[in-house]
Amino acid sequence: MRKIQEIGPIKIIFGKFPVYPYCNTLLIKNARTLLVDPACEEKALRAEVAKEKIDFLFNTHYHPDHIRFNNLFDGVEFLAHKEDAPCFRSLDSMAEWVGVKGTEYEKAWRASMVEFFGFRERSKITEVEDGTTLNLGKITIRFMHLPGHTPGHTGFFIPELKILFLADMELSATGPWYHNQRASIEQIILSVEKIRKMPADYYIPSHGQEIFTGNIGPRLDRYLENIYSREEKILQTLAVPHTLDELTSLSLISGFKLPRNQVWFLFERNMVRKHLDRLLAQRKVSRVGGKYQRED
Ligand SMILES: [Zn+2]
Image (cartoon, rainbow, N blue to C red; front, side, top):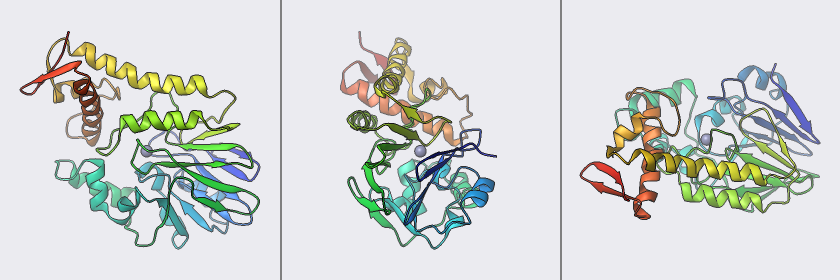
């Protein structure tokens, strides 16, 4: 049995362990019913959700651990942010945005998206953007664009209940993640500040077993601190010159020790490269040939 928590008309079905590839699913029942990211676990979805009449299906972004069981809800009106919509329309676009296109990882990645995650290209998408509202009856979903993790990554605010759904701005000790080619550290920092301004009483993340209440400030600060401490770790390591691949092999960000032939090696490399770009722009690091070195 999955852990379930209810706040008014919102049912939160917490994702199965290990965290990947599952996420927390939201079922919001009002005059009309909204289902968000059906990827908590197939059994729980069949038990808790399949019997409901769902009016809208919303994916916060295109990642496989959020879209995994979409196919159980075929025919339901599908919503996603307009900036992530190309990845729902075409696996080719997703390959490019993720960063696997044209790499040694592409073939295996495509096969797992289709066979394991059940990805199917969609032609009908109701596109939302920052501030788009969806009236469910007595409550309103106000979509909130929180870009950076992906370009169209989107949560929402429910003003009547002061609930903010954070999606993958999950404020965990191990995040944030900017492992896709089109991810952006700068956008994530801006999204954190956008969350800070919201007058919410409840903050629901897409991962983890906890709903946050009270002052969210210290948690946001820690999340940002994770970014800066990763950057500092890279800078310290570059006292000795390293290539991008050498830095990637150290797993300074994800901490996973993964062989080069696995796609998470590419994801770690994407994250390291984003930090190197920032450090180069700040002139804290220089590049000679293929090696990066700290500037003293
Ligand atoms: Zn994600």
